[in-house]
Image 1 (cartoon, one colour):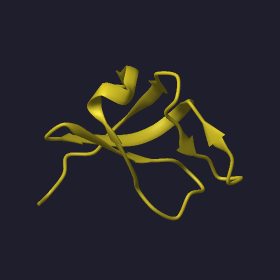
Image 2 (spheres, one colour; image 1 turned 45 degrees about the horizontal axis):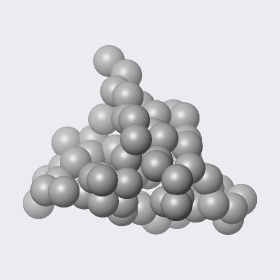
Image 3 (cartoon, helix red, strand yellow; image 1 turned 120 degrees about the vertical axis):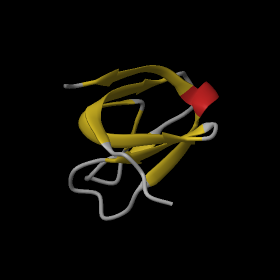
Length: 66
């Protein structure tokens, strides 16, 4: 499947996190690339060599830069 990647920021609800470039858990990230597929958000954090996946209910706020 071909994803339409967007740039933005993300904030997760308490109890959910992403792993940042320093291998630490974080519940918010700026300047990300993301795409939504089904009930999941695929997230690319700069400096992290792999995509991360969170369920849509884990997302408190996601912003999209134009």
